[in-house]
Length: 410
Image 1 (cartoon, rainbow, N blue to C red):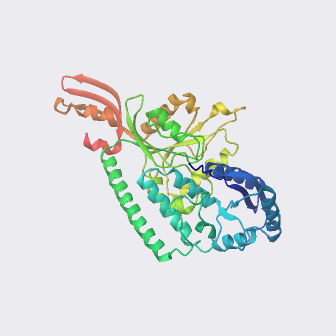
Image 2 (cartoon, one colour):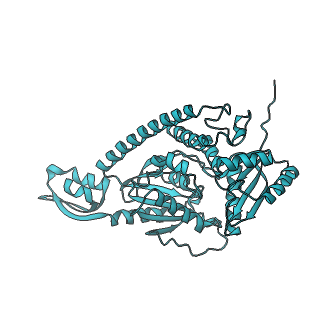
Image 3 (cartoon, rainbow, N blue to C red):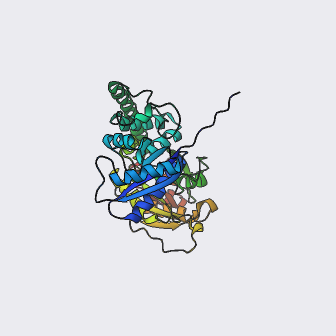
């Protein structure tokens, strides 16, 4: 028998601060978490203050010399830069430092490649990776090497001389498959609109507790881990509110600052579940020191996806982890709730907020249904909120709140 040990990559994080050093530190903290999630170890970090990023080498020549010394001292095997590198920056840094060069985008793509479980997720990840790598074949010499580490999962590169035409052909094939999936989603959405069950999309920064909320409410059995991007593939489940109203809860992929545009493009059909929902359930990790910036990143991503004019319920999760309780506010939300989902705290308030939001979207009706239409109150109970049901001589008297599109069908 042969024993094989997987060597853990030793990483140095590098960032350029063009305005605020504190923000650069926060971003590197998040990058360190991403690197750890990808299975590597951070052994050092470096931040350089510059007016703008160096177009040739990302950082200045002086810092490159410092970085060489740090690589020698820490025995680092790779560098991860906090911004997306151009092909020239890749090549020049690799020539100067003689170690593996990566950037934040590559790390995120690698995590996604490891987490994608469904055929759809795998196709979307491969498309994003190939789009990213197609312009960097010359600069990324390290991808031709045999071995493990970040950036080697997914489609990979067998040799440096890989034919660009073949990559373009593969991208074209994947785009066609993604388009087919998008068409399928459109059909599914159209069917949902015919059946007026409200859709509530759960969104939020990665690791805020979205999957925990879905599991707690619906027993969906979605993977929960204290890691970034623990779940990647979207999950939709039926859920009955305490008042009897049925809704669809959809969990979406977590957002992150500097979310690579390759991923937004590839996962657009998945992320757009939020666009076609009735209500946005925004889960926030209130114990995160940079909570406000994470909330801003979520709203910026929603803006990119053209998700507008939605009722937003913000759930400030993990309040049990707060040593001192601050005033938690989200001025863009219509409703706010404080919760500790894992400890079953605030679930009643979340249900109440969803019920109130649905009520605000509905039309109040008073109507007497003849007994020949005795099934109509049952439809109201399923798709709306039945307030009064009185069996009279002339029929069934009903007071209810129903979706606007349902009024003409009653």
